[in-house]
Each structure stands twice: as C-alpha cells, then as structure tokens.
Image 1: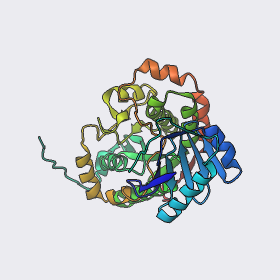
Image 2: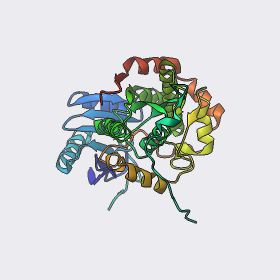
Image 3: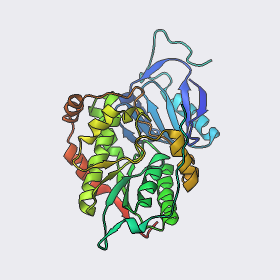
Image 4: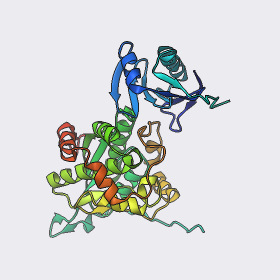
Length: 101
Length: 236
C-alpha cells in the first residue's frame, strides 16, 4: 500500500506516499484506529495517532511519521496499511493509478 | 541584480535604550524554531529593546524538537547579548484544530497568524510592552505577501515591528550564521503539518472575517492564555 518512504526535508520525520490513489474516510479511520492505537486528535483534515511513533494521516492517504528512524517509519506504515486494508475507510479512485514508480 | 550586504554587528547598545533611566521600548517577540525570528529578535535586542519571547507551540502538528530548538535559541540569544529573556510557551495546537474543522482551508495560515497576534497582544498588555516583534519578510512564504500582512495586522491594535521586512532569505541566513543561531535553527524539527497545499496569497479582509465568525475567537484566546506557561528571565 505504501511503497515510497522518504525523509522530510528537515530530517525530523518520514513521509509515506500511497502506491495507488485513494481517499480515506477519517471518521471511519478513527473508529478503526481507536481499537489498536491511541488517537491524539482528529482535526477533520487529518487524523493524528500514536503507536510505535506519532503519525499524521491525511485524507489522501499520505502519512507523516514522526520518527528519525527509517526502520520504525517503515514498520509503522506497514501496520497502518494492515489496519486499513480491506476496510470501508479506504475509497480507491476509479482511475486508480500508480503515484510513484 | 544582487546587492552587496554589509551589516555591522556592534555590541548591544545599552546606551541607546535609556531615557531618563527607564527602558524606552519593550516588545513581545513571536519566536519559533526557525531561522528568521531569532534574527529579528537579535536585531532589536542590539538596538536596546527589552524582549519578552512568546513561542506558539504547534504540537501535535509539529514535534517536541521545535520547542527544544526555540528554547535553545532563546538561551543562545541570552548568552550572546547578555540580556535575560522571559519566555512564554502557548499551546496553539487546539486553535489549529478548531480552525481546520470550521474555516476555509486556503486561509488557514492567516487565521493562525491572526490568532498568534491576538495572543501576543494580550501578553503585551500583561507585560506592559509597546508592540509585537516578528521575523516576517515580504514574499518569503504564502502568508507573507503585502496583502496578507495587511489582513493579519488588522487583528490587533498594537504595532507590529518587522525588522526583516525587506531582507531576502540569503541576507537573513548570513546574519543567522554570524550570530550563531543558524546552526540551532536548522537542527531537525518537523515543519507545521497542517499548512494547506494551496494557501491563499491574497486574502480579502471580508472573507477572513466571514470565516472567523464561525469560531469563538475570544474563547480560543482565553484558553490559550490559560494553558500557557512561562520561563522566568533567568530560567533558560
């Protein structure tokens, strides 16, 4: 689900970009994540949760993983993908295409 | 065309700041962990102005490294200039949440800045300060166009002092390097993650006021003031 993981320009976090275009229903995401991690806040346009690190989850699926460890970021992105995969919180676009090669 | 930059850095001129034995100006400096605001603060301390620093804590939309950097920058300025700096830390994250949930996304940075100004003005009243000091310069980011600066100015009555207004980024970095703040400002720290992808560069005052009418500004300011904490002038 998340194939691209790149450090933010300030090196304080990593950004995970979805492999395919989709939109997240953050209200449903909140319901799902409440069972598996800690909700920090739901700001409408993004959801912030805490698990192995703090993560900002955007409606377009982008994740900002607040850790300077690439390993932690990669594992955290995988956990979030696992929690979301196959749930109604993900709405894939009809023209769903690869965002990054 | 590139203009030569020739800025001298004399020691702090305490002789400039006394008129009949009292300090003639006190400013509330809105200081972040970035490059510009510490430079603006230094330039005004150098002119003998007494500074009270205010840091707007944007967590959870940034990380704790930004707060650490800011406190280190204040500590550095204090050591560099020999002037103690009282420092307030104000929770700003809840304001972001309310704005994001209720107001036009493209105007977010303007609402954020107007809230910061309002809070700084309230602290200025408490501290008996004469104005607000910022590191803004024209055109540096979307919220700092002349039109947007005009819109944020209207949020408060106090004067806003912007010593960097005509500087370009390279000039500001040159000063930051000379005074030793650049190395601290460029340490890792997460930028604000709630900044919209397409922020407005030419907001209309009436649009901003209409959007702000959707939220209880006074209540947000009060809650921010209730949640703030302070480091005494010698604490950092």
